[in-house]
Image: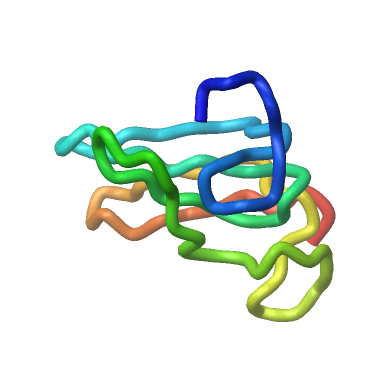
Length: 84
């Protein structure tokens, strides 16, 4: 939501540090403090966590401060994870 408050629910972000849009104007957001990548369909009110689980860590399903998100030429999602 664009209400100026951050949080951990699917409709909020906490220190989003990077965003990328696809050809359909959907966006991916690197949500730094929530240790996740959020996918937002165009005009959506609630995002979907597509990577990460909200906990900082080193497991395959965890991030330690995701700082960059992008698509490669085949539309795969690439994430830079600052401390892993």
